Image 1 (tube, rainbow, N blue to C red):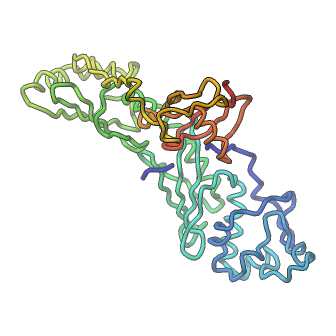
Image 2 (image 1 turned 30 degrees about the vertical axis):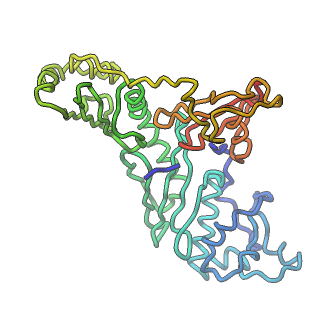
Image 3 (image 1 turned 180 degrees about the horizontal axis):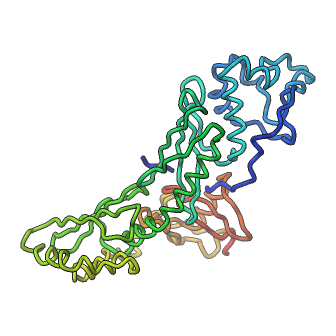
Amino acid sequence: MALHATPSRGSAHAAAAEVEPDGSREGAGEAPRRPAAFYSSVFAQVGQPLDEMPAPGETAAGKRASGQGDLALPCFTSSLRRSCLMGLAVLLWLQIEEVGWERLVSGKGDGGVSCLIFRVLDDQGRNHLLEITLPMNYPTCRPSLVADVPYLPEIQWSKGSRLKDVLCQFEEHLKMLQDYWSIMDDIDKVLWVVDPAKPTYAMCHRRIALGDDCYVLLHVDARKPRSLPECRFLGTDGKLDKLIINWRKNRRKWSADKKFHENLSTVLDFALPPPPSVNIKDDDQVDCGICYAKHLPIDDELGTHSGGTADYTCENPSCSRVFHSVCLRDWLRAITTTRQSFDVLFGDCPYCSEPVAVKVTDR
């Protein structure tokens, strides 16, 4: 499952705010109206027109005072007694506010919300999408998770658990996987990986080229990434015999203190070939991933960039898309989730969603 701006982590609204009889919540300041798509999904079976739903922080009494008519939602307390569906809608509303609306990517389902997708940023700045599917008897029963990780955490769920607890446990799970992903990144950068061409965060295997049409298929244990991996050799038997013998003889030399590629070279007693270098000549300059042109226009307004070629490359080895920094800057400015710190814009690669950063002005 390929899961794809890094939103800022603003302070979440308190989910346990006191509910007032008129439908307002104490301490909840005036907030903008949530996306219509969310309301359409959550309140699909409530029987109340979307335009009549109060925005967060807007009271039912306030709607009546403004001359917009009586609401089908008289107050949160009575609706919780009358409708299990509305009770779930209010519960989700409060729990999403506690997590942070800026982290919610989408909410979907038949009739009401049954699946929520949140964006989670790990310690190394990798973007992850966590899909949370809610059971029919939520929150009595725990939700199920889907994410692009090698294995999912066992969620601890109790009567008082909330969506925030799921996000927190998933973030702790991502911390446990940081060493594993660092090792896989090192493999992709240093060794000649021929498969997969575009690895995902969940993929634990790599097929490494050894030369002479010989390969080693490795499976790294995500729970113990520094341990000896599972190994299978592919190619002509005569060429592989020595490597197989060395593997069996030297595998005890594998050390958790060494880098993965150093261990592999030691155990095989073989100098591993690096990835094939790609020498791009001026005539073969690749197109910018945003404007799809090799060269920028010749224009005095572009300053030193006038007529220039792509000068920014995504650092994700499985992406490596190139851009004109001018194009990337304009792209980031058009994205609402882009952050700016001093003279640098921070956002996501348009292709792989990995973090990118470009100066606001460099002319």
